[in-house]
Length: 217
Image (cartoon, rainbow, N blue to C red):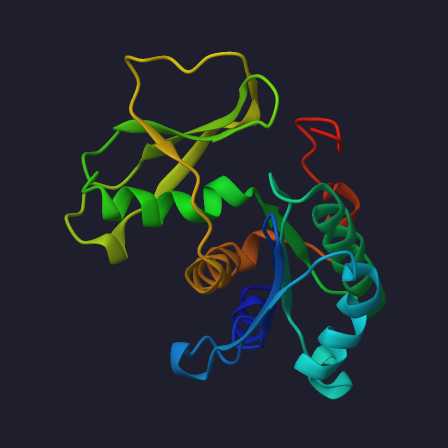
């Protein structure tokens, strides 16, 4: 069994990500960073029409069949975008019998935010938040789990999944969520590869979009 898992680790990874106004694909071949490929596109009201067409342009059917691991971001992001990319990822995973896992958008950006703000102390925690159009915030909590002083060795754990809160606690360390399509795609690929051996082919059944608010907020 161990030999089989080590063989699988060298196969390609596909990730699908969305933000408030864009959707993205990332592809990693043989876990080699220099061969990473990215597709990033802004959308208006045309996401339904373009998502599958753009995926077909990004990756060939032959390479799609060889995907060994698939990961998707589940939000918080544009409501419809999160829903559509999760449906797409679940469908691909089921059709090609490929493991699927998911990460919140805040978890994906957490390492970048910690690095940019020099937060490297082990067990140090901070919140990432996004202000809602009406009242309140969406906020998730993250913790440093590795006491290394270089960003590349930083490990972040999501301790509170993004949820709606009325107010932010002023005593906590707070950072506003800032999407960075390409950097977040790279991190999603990294997270996907690190979690490779923990996935199974039926994992798509448990992957759902994160809806902390209604689609009209």
